Amino acid sequence: MAHIEMTKPRSEYLPVFYNVDGVVGAPPADNKREDVLLVQFFIVLIGRSPKPDIPPNVVAALKAVQLTGVADAQTIAAIKAFQESNRQKRPNAVVDGRASPAKPGMRYAPGALWTIVQLNFVCKNLHPDVWPRIDKIQGCPDDLKKMVEREIVGKPL
Image (cartoon, rainbow, N blue to C red; front, top):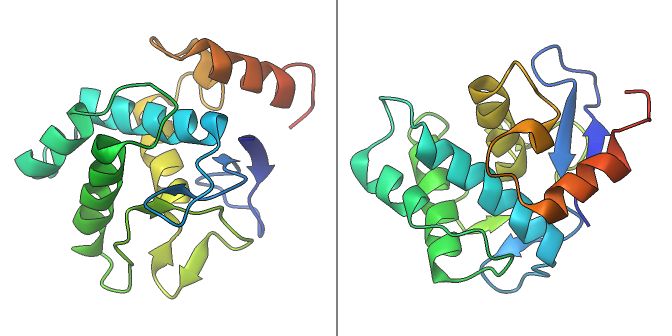
């Protein structure tokens, strides 16, 4: 199940972030429904308000994703496209079509952030007024609203 974590060491740019329990995307992957919905929601938000430097083919891949909770071909293609666009800035980044659980430190290699961390960064920057209350963002699926309630509401961060 998706959950929220504090960054370790604590980051001023992303003090808390949403993590997945299992791998989302291309096989082999766990593709737990709530984890997949979280990744899909972040992808949909980025596709809805793409930064001008995101190539049109990446935007098209992001916009093709539907909030189903199933890691379908469109979801995997969007993860790969997102990773590939990030690799242009971070050559150590892996493009595998998978959003793996982030381990402490937010990076899996020098200069290479976990995909789930990158998705969090972009969405936080798109919605700084409500972050980390993603349940307040238009279009947030009910299952993620329940996750936010479980993970944040009534709990000190």
